Length: 407
Image 1 (cartoon, rainbow, N blue to C red):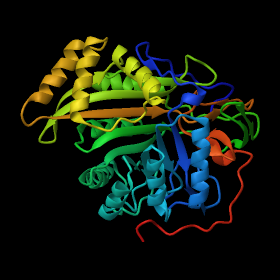
Image 2: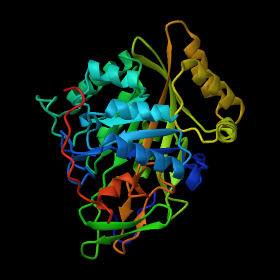
Image 3: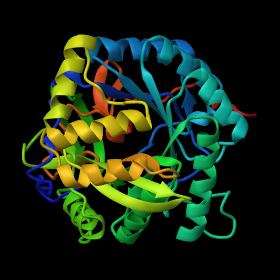
């Protein structure tokens, strides 16, 4: 949080500002439970443990579909693998025509659970692993080398059953090097296709939040200020890091609800080739006329904007060529495409996403992503998931904590 105003993260002038209107946002979050088997340093969960029954989850999905033209949805919690009806929820979402992402800390993720999630219809599983956790599956210590081994083990389990794998982490003020290492790990990995980095936010000063995304959000804070650590990292730090180490520039992003020049959500599209798990070519893709036209045509023909596109090497290879001739970088794209054609080489698409959580200034103004794609339906209102437990309508439930999925 900031004292008086949110520190801006300026746009890269070549990044594509995504065209979604309020009703056209193609993504949302489905919050299915509270309660977790792990404690994270920056966790936004504040509510009492409860597990939503399937009927309530279905009603929330129906409500989300009335408010947004969704193409995909992310299941979050709490720890979703602790929900006994998780696979039924995934099947229901697929039946409604939605691609399904799942966020988990991975403690309960084994080969059997991966197979069940794949059978149910999940597309992507994000594993949340970072230095702000005390993990039972890292008994020897939570250093970067141990975390990388764990991430590689879990992502290999997902890849073995045909699920796409992602890594989720929190960027702490004193751990920018951890972000750099996770970027390298994602680019080098044969199994990881996604990296989601969420900037740490100090939320202890927020007492409660009112309103919703469409009508506007306001907050009450404790005292007169909401101090931010002096070394708090911004998107500008991340942009500089990725450009300095990998010559990458943002592909697309979303501005804040309060300032069109403040980039709250930035994504990178990166193509790589590898041979025998050794990265050969790395190329950041610049948004071109092709991606803009594809997005518009998808909206007109299918009725909703694309958010998730299942991975296929042949599809990405074609995108490289069409991107090159419609405003992308010709030489770099062709080098990557030619490298992918060489026998024994593998082509990968890496999607790196950096997001700022909602923030509150001393006057109670809430800054968040414009038309936030990470919103949940909360008592009929769209609220950013990172502040939903601070919303005035939050009510503690009497439902008991459920048994884990694989127990």
